Length: 368
Image 1 (cartoon, rainbow, N blue to C red):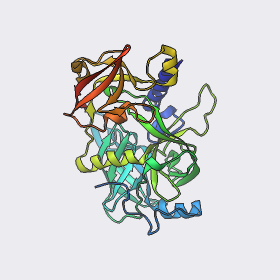
Image 2 (cartoon, rainbow, N blue to C red):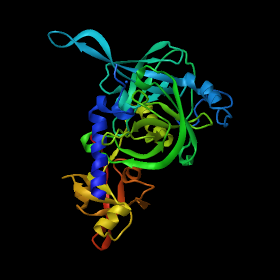
Image 3 (tube, rainbow, N blue to C red):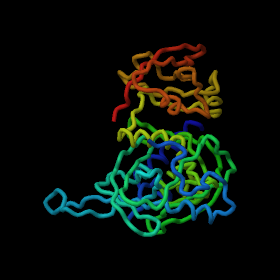
Image 4 (cartoon, rainbow, N blue to C red):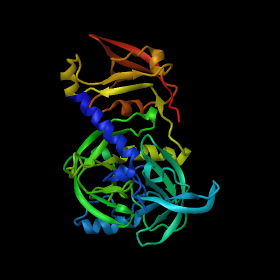
């Protein structure tokens, strides 16, 4: 049952990434024609303090929310570009500093040759792509000139189920600055992904029920202090012809801060490379396979010549800890791994059959 469930989630995510036109929600990609740290300059002197009205919150933060337009060059009759561009899709973004950096999703800008943004008052400005990271599905574009507003990032580790949240975005690329409200339904939600195959790693997501649609991708999820607690990224499409209500997901702001700071500073994100495919150890998996442990990451594939292979990691091993940090429902394998840098040699605690062993793995830089 657990294996089938993981395969189902993987298949669902593959559909999200591969068939944008079929998705009913944001990770379909753009809607068809779609030094950073927490505490950046706020849009108002009172930012960080809870408001008594959602309308007041929206009035404060919406000047910083933009529509991101992905433009692609058109082919001429004999090949090559004919010198024109056409909108390929739209998404949403938000301004996070006085240099004009705008955070959005990578799948919003994917394949674009040029970019522009539309501000909340309808004015437009060209934008430059600073960097994009497929693994986290985050990107940064930049605009020059006057900025209508700036918002700051919250500390997402403090987000709790039941906290009210507000989403602002441009569903379908046409209904700009649409506001929806809901609550955080859960935190630390994971969706499996295989970065070796170019898939995003969606881990530690914030689940909420503030409605989002194609075109909301990359848009902000606000707490009631007017801070961005997450970047709206995906939702679950209809199952067996039946609509799925209130299942939407955002990348938490702490992850956003870490990734986008690297994008701004160096244009790319450097990840450590371990070289395995894993199955999270859940209670269902433990029960199905009668495992001797109740947490960790089960090894289902080891790449030849990878750091894991060189260290002697084997299929059916269970990775319990990396450098003393436990892998469990609160700390996924990818989250723990990404706290380390290429070139580090880390102690890895492994369950192999009925015994535990420690091996040393020297991490490499993940391939592009």
